[in-house]
Image 1: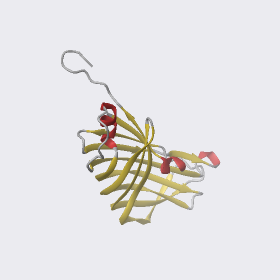
Image 2 (image 1 turned 45 degrees about the vertical axis):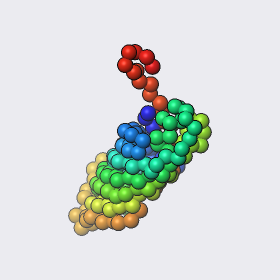
Image 3 (image 1 turned 90 degrees about the vertical axis):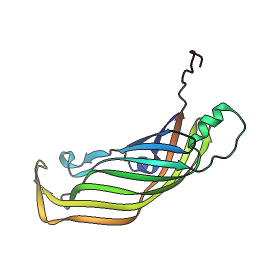
Amino acid sequence: MVAIKSNLLYDAITWLNFAIEVPFSQRFSLLYYHQFPWWRGGQNNNKYCMRFLGIGGEARWWFRPMPRPADPKHVKRDKLMGHFLGLYGQGGKWDFERKRRYCYQGEFWSAGLTYGYAMPIGRRLNLELSLSVGYASIPYRHYFPTEDYELLIRDRNKTGTWHYVGPTKAEVALVLPILVKTRKKGGVL
């Protein structure tokens, strides 16, 4: 089984994202996620921009699943259902610009713990809710773009690192579980 996800909170603000989760047992799974909003607008398509590239991973431990009728389809799908705890790490680069006044770019990394719950909302669709708390380190640099927005001039007086402890990510995700058929010995499905 493999699950493909998209965080609806990010989608609502045009923050493109996807995630892939693979269970390795009834209680353990690994998640990879990727965020990549990359848009700009205004005069010469550079007056406003939001560029962000983030990748991350999470190891999840699922609490004991609730018992269900002995149906092989439910057993496979229930692997990524119920309450879970996770340990995550993420990092990336960012650049935000607004009318040449608010122009910052930098990198970030974050690590922490996640608690969440996943439940079915349709025959082939799940909903996952989670909140992560941890530490984030965010180095930043201020810059001034030239009149034609072709060159960025760094302001060395406005650089630093922002350190943050608290909620680092929230998720309301649509999850599409995909069951993968495997062959057993002897060639029988």
